[in-house]
Image (cartoon, rainbow, N blue to C red; front, side):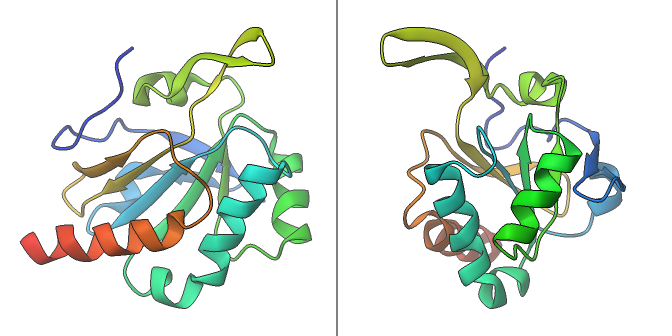
Length: 158
């Protein structure tokens, strides 16, 4: 499935967070949302990305709700979140159905091996439920600041 693009309605979802609470995109209407997809808890790149959102939390949380999403389990998310003191929810998409709807479940290659997995991608979703910005092939280092800058730009247009 092709990736969701800026201007598209954000595909609805209902996923469990790190504590087993259900999070529905529909309940976030009226808020700016940063939905960032990452491959796996407690791996180097994913830890860098999560910790950058944590380290910029004051600025980020002032302008948007942040949710990290991966196919990891609720239990794995809980451990990852606690280990790195992440202040935002991590959502479990174990069957990767939502990743497929967003177009981020794709064929990947690593060390000569091909496999299906999450492409590191971030979506900024506006209060109207439409995707305002998409970041593909995200480089974890510096990403939180990149998202903050883009969020200021898209909010300025509204």
